[in-house]
Length: 316
Image (cartoon, rainbow, N blue to C red; front, side):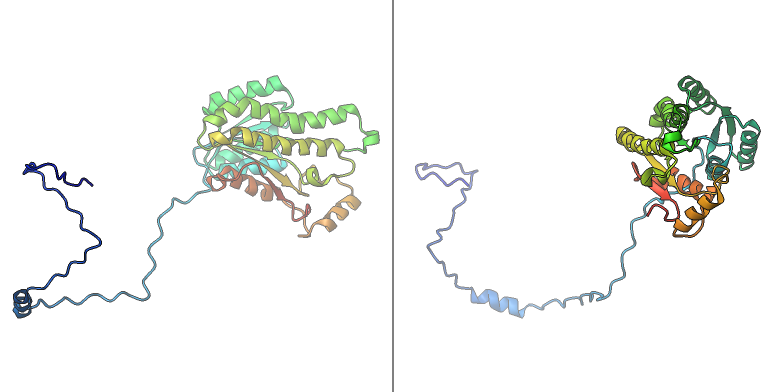
């Protein structure tokens, strides 16, 4: 704040200097009695009554937030191993949610066509593609056909899997390689060839079917558990690579599920497994399909890099 310059004798009349009071001087102001008398004589306005605050106010309405939905209308899903068992259930569940479905199968053409017809009966577009998921070139060609036919891909479910069980001392190199090629490399192949389309999607989802035995181990399945455990590492790594583009990558780990793959288990082995399940029953393909459908939906948009165990507690 500027102080007036005492050396200036003719200050600019347009400038009114501000004078700072001396804090050491106490000024006593004598009130004008005539002002007080006049103020007392003047009629005073009556103050309007003030509203009394409600001690228990009603809570304010919450801000509306758009609800996430499990509806997949207008999206395109690719499901491998879709002609039977868990893959069939997943394809039909996604179709029931409104997704168009591309069904990849290995060799059961009649079964794949049945699934295609069932999906179309739900009001969506469905097409079946025969492909060996372990073959890099075949999966590339199939991925190109799918993107041409549907225009894009929003959801990829890597479900195709096989077993060739044996104790390690008796397991052949061919059986080890085949299981790893289908169960692990197959997921790599389809993910690699469809990833660009998934990255362009506003709802990109990759869901890999692993197994509870990948977490616990299981005698006689060194090839299968190795492939499925590898799929968990693959899931977590790709989740980190694509998260910046809004694509989520998760795995579902089924326990004992009623399919034709588990129907061949010896009775003693089946009883032993049933006894280990806290919920005391095997699961159904629909149990797995519901989990996959959730992960494919907007309701799971903040979940990535996770392994969802659907096993009745078997892996506890």
